[in-house]
Length: 180
Image 1: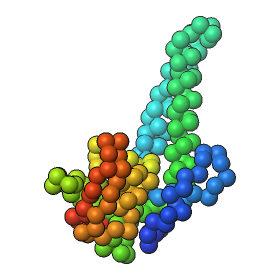
Image 2 (image 1 turned 30 degrees about the vertical axis):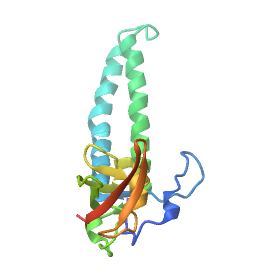
Image 3 (image 1 turned 90 degrees about the vertical axis):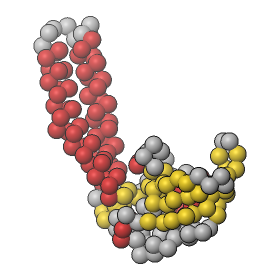
Image 4 (image 1 turned 180 degrees about the horizontal axis):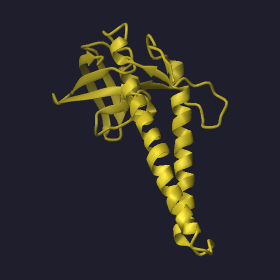
């Protein structure tokens, strides 16, 4: 894992490289997001995989594997776990870890910012701008690549942005910006 604090999020970073493609895409993760992914990786390696491996071994000992549903399901589950482990390892190895509180320019919205917005009706919503691997709309984390995330980049308190959503366009005004 690398640890850097980008001075700002560049437009060119918004272009997503296709999986397996040759593009040099810089992926950002917040420190908290990287820690969540690392905990999941450790859980898969130290708990899930050994448990499923033991279940597959026990099922294999029962004899004919071609008609053994527990064995077949267990092998499938192992492949899924291994695929997720490889994915997490690759993401963590290639990501740039950002600590939002260390952002130099805290007067504008950049990656990692927690932004409070007010819509046209006066309703306030708070979002943290995160990477695509950290999205949790229920938890208030939206992607820097989302329409709202893109519209907010480099904006300051008091700025108004227009965002097109499925229900139509909405105007949002930035009420506060925090880097926690």
